[in-house]
Length: 112
Image (cartoon, rainbow, N blue to C red; front, top):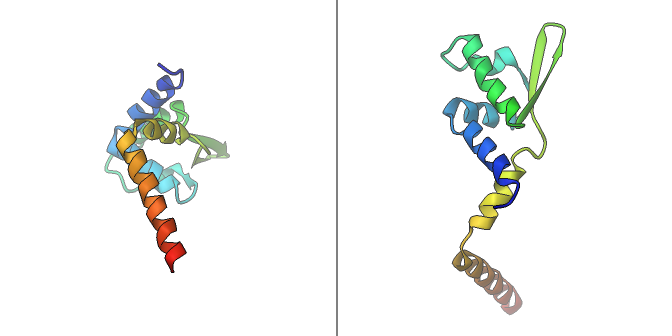
C-alpha cells in the first residue's frame, strides 16, 4: 500500500462531515474570518471551532491571527492527494473510453 494512503484517509475523514465540506466549499471562493464562516451554521462557536481544528489537523486549511481576528484559507494543494487516489481507482474500461473519446474527437475535427 502506497505511503500516501494515510494522507488519503486523513483527508477523507475530515471531509466526511457535511459542515466541514461546506467550509471547504466556502473557502474555495476566498479566505474568510472565523465569524463569517461560522455564521451560516446553527451551532455554538466552540463547536464550529472543533470542525476547523479537524480541517487544520488534516492539512486542508491554514489560519492566521491578526489581533483578535482569525482568518482561514485553504492550503494550496491540500486536496491533490484525493485527485491522485481517485485517478488510480479508475477502471481500465474508463481509460479505454477516454482514449476512444479523444480518438473520435480528433477524427471528427480532421473530417471537417
